[in-house]
Image (tube, rainbow, N blue to C red):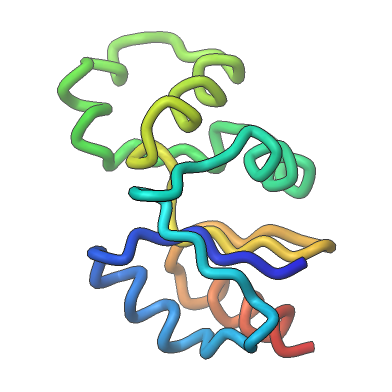
Length: 117
């Protein structure tokens, strides 16, 4: 299993995908029209330490809802990501063995190695 969760209108995601040069067996999931399934989120979570690590504090809704003033729990992070795609830090590259979160160079280089074996 190889999946890249991204936002097609995001320049950072576009650059990341170009860098990754995903193989043909990699599924590209545009999270705005397709959303994030609870199964996919659970698979991501299985390879990381928390839902919080998958959560984007840069989302406009984060500020609009004043979520920075609240004490969010793991359940809150999970529900928010499933509720609205902008709460997922992106891109997320998911393989059967690992998850790579965000556009940091180190993360993308590791994801590229994992995708291309």
